Amino acid sequence: MTIPLRRPIPAPPAEGAIAVARALKPVLAPLAAADDRDGRFAHASLAAIRDAGLPALTVPAARGGGGAGLAVASAVIGALAEADPAASLVLAMQFVHHASLARAPSSASGPLARLQQAALREGAFVNALRVEPALGSPARGGLPETVAQATPEGWRVSGRKIYSTGAPILSHGLVWARTDEASPRVGFVLVPMGAPGVRIEETWDHLGLRASGSHDVVLDRVPVPDDHALDLRPPAAWGAPDPVTLAWNTTLLASLYDGVARAAQGWLCEHLNGRAPSNLGAPLASLPRFQEAVGENARRLAVNRRLLGGVAAETDAGEPPAAGESGLVKLTVTQNAIRVVEDAVALVGNPGLSRKNPLERHLRDVLCARIHTPQGDAVRLAAGRAALMA
Image (cartoon, rainbow, N blue to C red):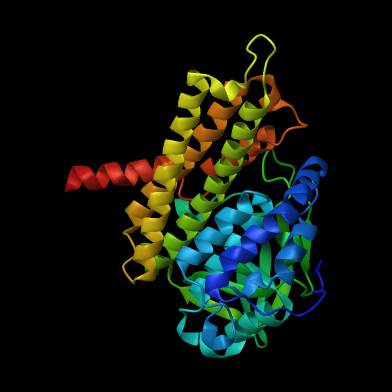
């Protein structure tokens, strides 16, 4: 399903995008609560995001986009995630892929240029479709079962992708596939989601990020032009991840969950200032044990802010951290975010788990941080091996 723009609004300049995101927060927050409760895709939130021009924020300024770097993109995702993390996840993937595509040698013309123009003119969304039932996460290794078969006209793509975030709104999917050649190549094929043979099965029924539309996408001999095979390589040529792309991916994911934690901290402070038990005769916020607990959460959030800001600044300066460090930052920030929300729930008791309050939703959402690649065990294993071999 596509969402028509009510009016064509260009991408905001990078310096104004953060203010745009903050202004959207009171619009998105009630939509997020309703979508979560009903398990409904975040169509309305993403319509507001599209009307604000944000889908083209990381399209290069030379192409008419916002030209934002990682620091601005991170701040935008963090702000929006305080209100609607599910919609923010769809937008974060948009930012990552357009930032990556802008660095591709072939982005000046052909399908990538058309993809950029679609983001500018229509607010079109794109995401990578990588995970499969048998393969799991490609980051763990293995060949995809999705096959791109060469034809005289181009390619026929067949397979099933799971956990395809934003599936209901995507104009295109970057499908991770292997060729049917004797020596298969592996890589991305750009598939229009409206092409014949593409079907979305609404399988997403999750504990957290319920409005992200991370459904299954089934591809049944989907025809795509020859030039839509964007990057096919022998499997061995897919070595270490690109440090810039990894920094973008890990930083935006971490920023999202940090935003969820900041929303939880905001709710907690409001609750403690407003709750005054009759036997106390003063707000709970006046008690030292609550002040210390809130202070501990503030410490975690301050560390997160410094870590995210540091990685973004280095990446924008052309000196992204090594892959291992990006993973460690993502793990540290998300662990801090989880602890902030868990401790907020423990501190207030039953009100924290009441569905009339947003804290229980923040808890469900923030736990999804553990699922995103790179996962904690892989990050620690890589760091341990590097330290022992130093």
